[in-house]
Length: 487
Image (cartoon, rainbow, N blue to C red; front, side):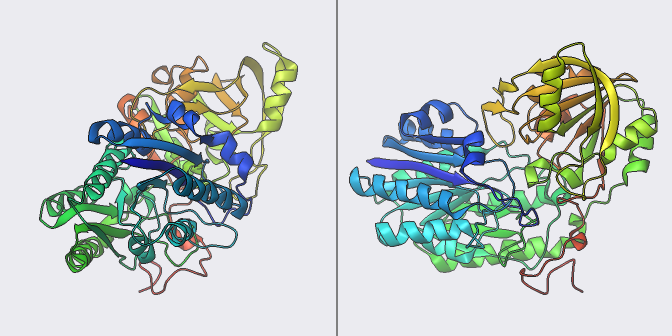
């Protein structure tokens, strides 16, 4: 059995008008052929799971292409065109029996509101109705019913932070092997409750998501069900498919799959009010942090969640920490121009100027700072633990560490990088456990790395492209009515 392994993954924030092109994918990961195996084999990612599953279930994994980029604005269609063409060519020319595909589920392109649906549609058209296609999808995927009809099976992550990606990739590989051996005939159904689930409510270590996930795990033990995925959706995409969903894969029985999906979707709907998580605004949050006797305090900048496609140069919490005379704070800001400035000054030199607030007017004003260049770095590190996103090789670009009065620490990087790994700081000589305040531009994903060292976590209702309140966004294309926007 020869199975192609490939993927194109992007979480697209449609409120960010800067497009995501091939350069952004190259900065993330754009690997082909054997290079794909070299980069992803050991990763805590579904692609690593595909590769491990090939050995475990005795099929040959044929590496094609894996394209991944940091969440941002919609993807340029040319990137999708290139990836799909490479997959089609490989499947047609190399005697391939099936395709394991890593998708996100919330990719939007210039012309397609659901880029993932379009990828599957093109592959199905090119490869035929009987060609086995099994895809993994991110917990934040905005899944369409058509995706369930186009793929034999869809398998979603079931943790947030995402720490089960490799495991779900192995499950997809198992389903593929059993399909090719004619042991099963997987069919997929999707159900979508009319609601928006804010990111804090999506945390699978919080109720009621804990109970919903337990229900899903129990249901998938019932024949003829093969896999059940409760999906939270990505609220920062103004598209028809935006919102949570339930995916159920069954052995040859689409009606059973649809019934189970609708029942679990109703369970999600029934606890919709419990899925709201209130949090303080910046001034109050910093006051709470200053009064804490447990350190480090992690301040979560929800409105500038880089993992949700935000700017990464928000200054609201930096400004508030300086205003309240905090000491021992570490704040990371995406600021390529200032990184170059720091490199030109050199280690030990005086650094002064405005940082942050350069990309838009949604994440705070530029902040005037004056300090010393403590260290300069290339910004690369390797993550060996299971962390959200599953990436092993990480790169935040050229990075400068600036020591500010207080003392406080300002990290300036040149690639927008979600705080999924402590390596982002430890690779710079910063020991996060020894600091008093750590600002993370995230929502929940950071927890796999930061929660074990945190003395206290304070989630902050900051403004920006990833603000926690959906009422802040001018939705025009989503389905209506939609809870909580409509009565």
